[in-house]
Length: 506
Image 1 (cartoon, rainbow, N blue to C red):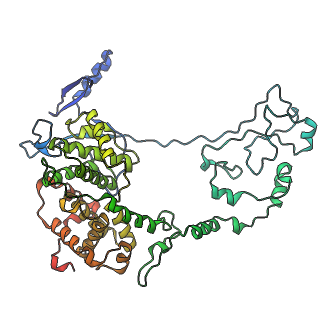
Image 2: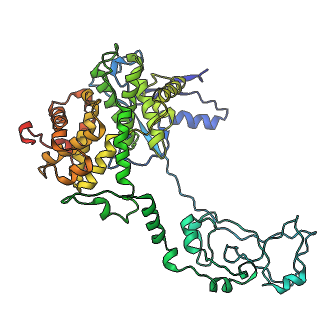
Image 3: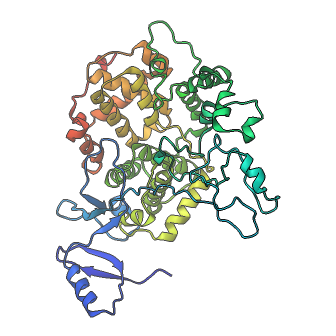
């Protein structure tokens, strides 16, 4: 049973719902009553800001379809549709610095025959290089004092892994190392002194050269065996991956194979023409829903990948399940909720999505729709989206940021067009980039873009004409979120770029 809720009337005239707060302390009740007169702030967890997203001071809750929602009330006001807003209180997360590891000496037990008190005890972390005397366990025979004096005089200490390997000093080596670090640092010895000798003796017996143990040598061996990045670049094409071969953030060794794999997987996520079997839905209702999802992405400052994945999940679900108009907004909210869990570092909570739906659904309905959505799509969220293709093509073509932002605006505006759901995401990304290049009068379709996209100019012509027609139409007041978003200075005001005629495109 849901907890009791009470409506509170504040000074601003906004009616909202909150849980009843029981307070027995008169002083706390006075403080609570005093705070009711102010704005009631909704606290959500701090979010990482989306790429180049303008700052949002308010979060808007509204129904996606206006009077088509199952809220039972018409949310459109006579004063131009004023939106109910609540101020976000962002929680700042302070980074915690892990304490340095303190060395722990082995506790002596009364039954163990250890070294006499006068023997020196090593008070440092034991590494693989310095650990020469095996540790004495209770089940083993204790080492005799005379035999210990003949050795190096170092008592075995408890091995302890550093909690934070970034805090180690020059004298301390982390035991938590990767495989490549082990190959590079571990001395190879064949002498029996490695078990009982000193550190100097083990280093003298090292027979492995620096060149064979270097990380570059290991990387070259992996590249040769796995055949990484082996693709022939035609003459006249800029080899972008070769230029950034040593940049770990570009993953040039795998990038070509990754996007070739994405191209092959596109056929598994094709969406059909489902609007004929959706008896309760129309294309206009889908456009309103996508516009509302864009507003969610902007309000919660989510990644753009989350938005594209959420829209893709909506289309895949509607292609397989017939829904009513009252459930359409629930499908959109659940899709954004699932996409946030997949792409976001700190996804919003379920209460945030329930709030932005303006109380149209409860927690149980949201969770059940989330489960049903994941089952329908077969638990496969690794969907190739057009936004990832666009970023890859723009990098390989070395386009400027204003041109890329214009291509992002064209691509995001196409999400509201029902005619684009059957087009491959890689083709949509290539067409959006070409249209942006022509609108900015930068260049035509270059051999480099043709090679990395895999599409010739003839392959993208029809899609370019469709996208140009979409952004050329007069914008309707109900779906202005994308246009207003990209009219901001942070996005170089690309939405105000003059459109180009069809005969001037090619």
